[in-house]
Length: 61
Image (tube, rainbow, N blue to C red; front, side, top):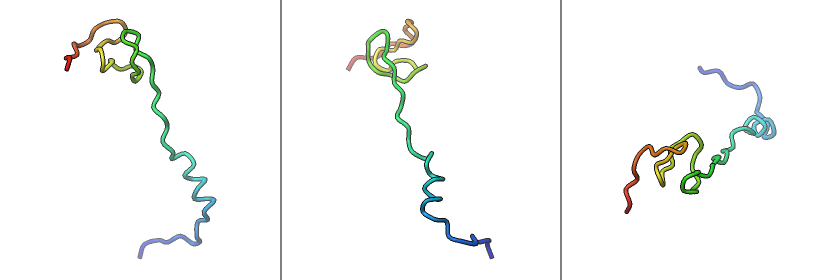
């Protein structure tokens, strides 16, 4: 037989434990080359530049 809790966990205690479970908004920075918003420390998906250098060429659609 598996162990069971001795008493019911109240809604307040349960909710306080889950206080840190919320999703955080993603932090975006502006690309210095094209001005689009991108993730920090990542190559810009719109222009292919990172730290002023072209890392790869982006194909135009």
